[in-house]
Image (cartoon, rainbow, N blue to C red; front, side):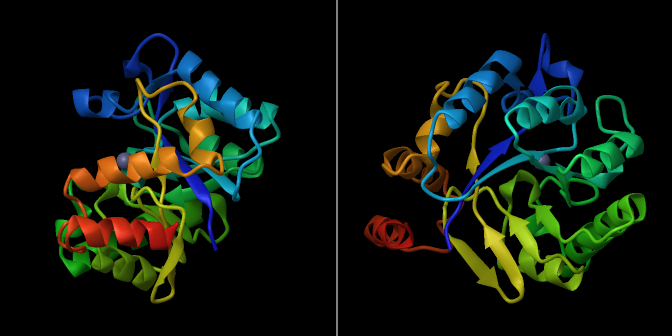
Length: 246
Ligand SMILES: [Zn+2]
């Protein structure tokens, strides 16, 4: 099974301070609303090769004030991933807004509880606790099962999936730019392509086109950051693996 999952963060009208985490690192991912509109416009004018999933991390208020209406105007719904400890804080979604988004058809998922700086470096107990606390809080809030999560910071490792499974999650989105869906035990692991501030305005459209070049560039650039070096061997093997995976 293949799918293209896109990863967005907050969207803002005048200032990145309007929504979500407040730091220069967080701001680099936040999109001005006109850039977000351009990305959606590109997607609307494309016939995606595979099922398309739009995901938004971090639980910022802008999912409610900006993102949801724009997706719904096109007949779409998104996946909204929330680090549950920020719920109700300034610039983040409130319990009432999360319930409303859920009722409007958006998929609410866990983005851990505390958004650890590096989840993959936490102990197995800590990882399981991050997933189970956040899952429990969202289930209490929504009154139904929550089985989807996304990995904060993209710090994925097998133990992150193991902890998610022990906490009852069934699907985990990472930040590895890949279309393949794989299984880590009982957990389905899905890659995602990040769209961030300053990317070309047709980046989303090109990521879902049949031609693989934009996806390959995203994969190569992510790989160059060394996040997968412990997992994969030489460049040759990595490229071979990518060709195989697509
Ligand atoms: Zn995050």
